[in-house]
Every structure is written in C-alpha cells, then in structure tokens.
Length: 151
Image 1 (tube, rainbow, N blue to C red):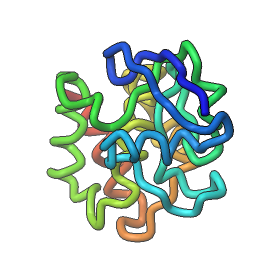
Image 2: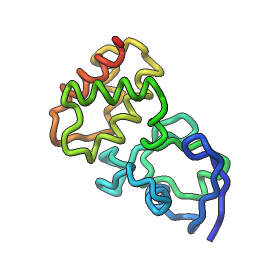
Image 3: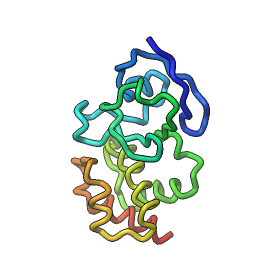
C-alpha cells in the first residue's frame, strides 16, 4: 500500500491504495462516483478525468503515477461557471441521456473549449474522439458544445 499527495478537485488530498490500483477505483472508493467504468480498457471514455490538465482514461492510470498531480473529476466542475454553462447546454440540447458517458463527455468538452473557445464541428469531433456514446448519436453533444461556446 502507498499513500500519495495530490490536489483533487482543488483540494489537497492523500489517496491510499496499491501502487498499481486504477485511479478509477481509488476515486470511486473515495466517494467520487461521477467517474464511471465502461469498458475498463481505455476505449470508451466513461472514466475520463483530467490529470495535470490533460484528459486521461482513469481506468488506465495507476495510483502511483498520480503522486503530486492535480486531478479533476466531474464533481470538481460544480463551482466552475463555464462548466455550469456547458452542463446547461447538455441538458438543453439533450446531450445527456443515460448518463454513463456524460461525466467523461463534460470533462473532454471542457478541454475542447479551453483549447478552442469557438470550436468547429471538426475540432469538437476530434476532442471527443476517445469518448463513446450509445444514446445520443453525438450530434446532440456537438450541439451542446457549440451552444456553450456561444454563451
């Protein structure tokens, strides 16, 4: 077992676990259940979090790799005005349906909007490429990102 120091959703935290424990599991054990497990192989994006500013699949990240890192989960978006506008756009455009992909889609979409404040459809598609959704057909999610960019 190890204990690492990190900044989790803006707060200094100590996370404990086996060095090779998946970040996904450690987060969920710490009651951050917004991060979902989809495939467990880094293919679906349901477990997307931000690690030092980059989107990563938390099912592929060992706890030991997170020492000294800044980790942002969907729960960490709750006080960010830009994230709230994005969440409102997801609701207004019906971009959130069953909810399994939504946390990962929100984190990936936030990254898109940081890189491209007025993203093209192609930039949105590229930014969401690692996140799968079986409910929306993606156009509603793309519409939501575009709407959030306009606001």
